Image (cartoon, rainbow, N blue to C red):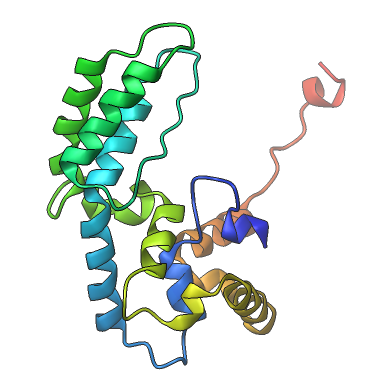
Length: 192
């Protein structure tokens, strides 16, 4: 369960997984996709700020990439300036470089941008879920974590082929099923 929900990590459940779990609840796919697009629109600048923080972090020093989810582009730029000014661990965090990275990545994270085209892989799952919980029109189960967890467990338990929910799961299952160990040679059998 914790792997699916990725608690405490940067990713939440894949939104495609959530759609698979909500089958039979009356959620229309086209409406669901339109709602997700609104969420991604709202997260574009936030994701650009997080990417900038990640790529500008001084070597060997982890940098907190959390930013306000409801901040405007200008507020995020100020938040980045403040983070750079407050950073005191080891090497200096270059404020100008950080702001340039943010400005460079904003178009990538907005509609039509290269990261936006792969939002489910690039945007933080926890941010997507947080936005879903505060965006009208999403199924109520997505707004109540215990119900969501229960629904995931029930769906996994009762679906004979949960690996078919996501193409990469099916591909992994196929690869594992086709895997054959390398033939044993004299060198491997002798422990060399």
